[in-house]
Image 1 (tube, rainbow, N blue to C red):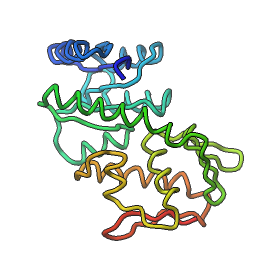
Image 2 (cartoon, rainbow, N blue to C red):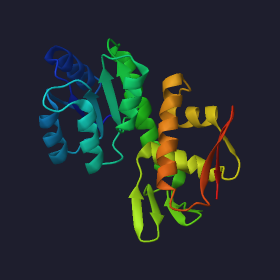
Image 3 (cartoon, rainbow, N blue to C red):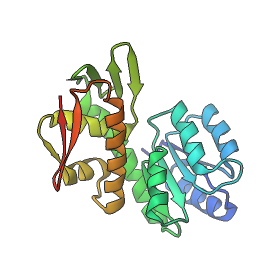
Length: 228
């Protein structure tokens, strides 16, 4: 994981340089960009394995940057840095494709832990799913490629969307316990991760709505059930 190249977008030069130098000391190649437009140009021409994006930036904010990055690479892990602590702002970050968030001020050790946890999940997930395929009503899901097929169309899923759909398929027609899914995919079953999972469930329902026989049910107090 130490060979992962990190894109860091932070308009506060003091904080940005502090983070960059810390991550370099931990053997992560890290490039710093002080606005979203420059960061996006660098992303398109670089070979990055993880992005750390400040939400409030000039010229292009972190949410818009994340959306643009997702159009180029739907699977790259994204961590948001934010001075905001409102639940709605954090959920907005997840809607734009964030995998995690960290609220300023924060410790360097916490950021490092989150980076390593995300990379660990990203690096181990494909090995568990190698060569597997699921038929979900009129859909076919390839978790290795993270693609959902329906007739002549295909949808590329993000890593978390794919991991969550994989768990639902493994437990199809059974209850997928909420805490189990959170600890398996997000490691921590805290409030914000739980709300993030709700966002991803909503996305999966949208992808699967072309077949009315396929449903993801909320099981009150328990979790979710994929019916197909």
